[in-house]
Image (cartoon, rainbow, N blue to C red; front, side, top):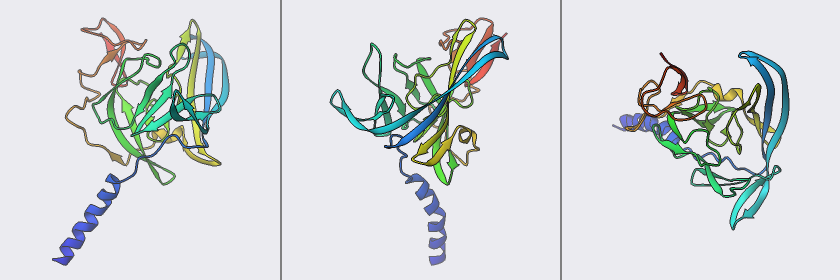
Length: 250
């Protein structure tokens, strides 16, 4: 009987450790995101001419108070705070207010509303959540049905590896000019904790699909045009985005 009990404990304990794994904070003093912007001109895809690369960083540099709210600041004068698995960012420009940028409490099938300050599409639908291991550490990874780029997603404790932690996510196209962004690496002091390539690592654990989950291949997944506008009703012939993939209506 004791042997049976011991075997049961040994089987249950690893699962218990996974369940008890603490939330991985994103806002840590001294954490630095090394970014790159790509600016270029093109005549016709995939032909790209006169591409220019620029580098910059987001570095958390202490704390401050904004509108009575204790928060972290960066050397770029960005402001953010973290509470109950959610990351709030202080909007700039003419609409200065606190907006929700990340919610790591979401489950598969949940929808995340993007504030008018930062949205490309109105809602993001969680299509999958899994866990990847980087330098012996576990990171939860979120994919969204509306995101076409395979690198475009969230990582708990890191943010959006493609656009950076506190950035309005978009690739702007003006005539024959375009601007794109990506996060190359994330450091705590002198230690690299995450890289752009780490995002595509094979998952070793996937979270179960809930009742409200929306599968990427399901026709109920929202359909968007190439400008990020949600399509209502039956779409006309053309190229669209559904479930993070190109969808061609013939």
